[in-house]
Length: 126
Image (cartoon, rainbow, N blue to C red; front, side, top):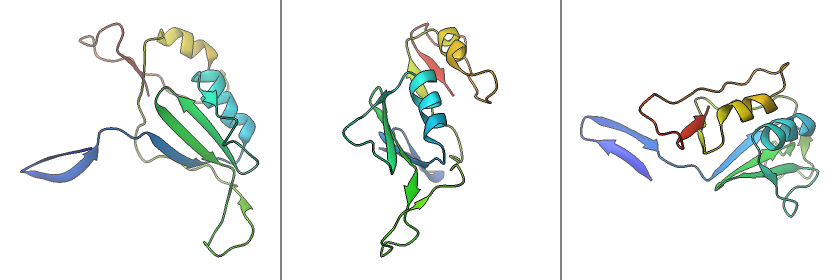
């Protein structure tokens, strides 16, 4: 779904159900997406090439190996983590302090409270 206006020709996505990102380290991926965010690993689609994590209705497909070209016979290990050029917002009813407490202190993650007009049950993790 997109949103446009007559004086703004840019389209903006309103919902991304599947987000594909390249990650070089499956241990760090599990630490963040499962242990910290509270996601659930999908054992059916997780394998040596990818980690699939469900967070509510959102799915993170975290590739550990990729092919440079479609006709490549072999996948190469991801060596550099892919960065999303913007924000990914996940909504939660869980208290943000509980989520903060699960984040390792030696990592750099950001949690941002919503404005004061947001209800107690509509909190977001950025």
